[in-house]
Amino acid sequence: MNFHKDSGDSFEPCKHMEAMLNRAADETAPPAMRWYALYHAARCTRCGNFLKRVTALIRQLRDMKSEKQPVAPDDGLSTERWQAIESGWTEVEKSPKV
Amino acid sequence: MSGADMTETGQSNSKRSMFAAIAKQYEGALLRTARRLCGTDRDLAQDIVQDTMISAYRAFVEDRFDGRHPGAWLTRILTNSFLYAKRQNRSDSGLDGDMIPNNDAAQSNWNSKIPSPDQWILEGTFSEPLETALLSLPESQRICVLLADVEELPYAEVAQILDIPIGTVRSRLARARMQMLTVMRDLQATEMKS
Image 1 (cartoon, helix red, strand yellow):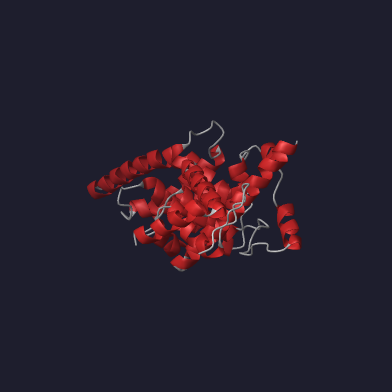
Image 2 (image 1 turned 90 degrees about the horizontal axis):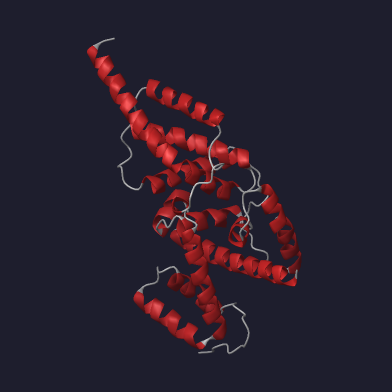
């Protein structure tokens, strides 16, 4: 098995490892795959850098989840939009149930 | 008005006020997700949130909402509204397609489609490198990231919503994450130079 031993912060992973590293990072890898990905990443500089970065990226994305963020004052629908929505609801109430 | 009609009207009002409370609670969250889906097309984002609120109310009235995880439920409807709107050719973000640049010419073309950080700040919506990286993705990948990584829906559910195989969800996510890491690194390098 070949391991990259670059110095620096290159994060282009070994081609055959990319999918496994992604699954290790987002916690969807089965145990054996996860073990193999971590084993490889611990010995390969590029894959190690990639795993570290992609794990941090996924964490940041999960923190973006809209429900976790406060609503800004202008972060809403206009009055006209709400009026259109209310009209739509009225139409729904009038329409026969499926 | 008969007694039966009055009961029905009462139930309808009660359902409406219950749903209105949910809608108000998730209004901001849905709009943010819609903007991430639609890029700079703010009108389309508002359109799909409006469609979502009405479709969701129909489902609510017909007892097709089980009361659990309203945020995830509304996000699914929002995504379907977005996909429907796209099919109706209501949007042209200019970022469509599933191609990742693999040569310099393509890379240059791709970079030209990414608004500069200044542009995002001027737009007043997206100022973070992460948001910029997300918006640099082709739409097909951006939807996968929003559903799987941001909203944390299981891959199987993402595959079902988008009507694609689960392997395609995984490969789109892998390509999207690599592109986002590259964009964020480039933004950081540009910032350090300036």
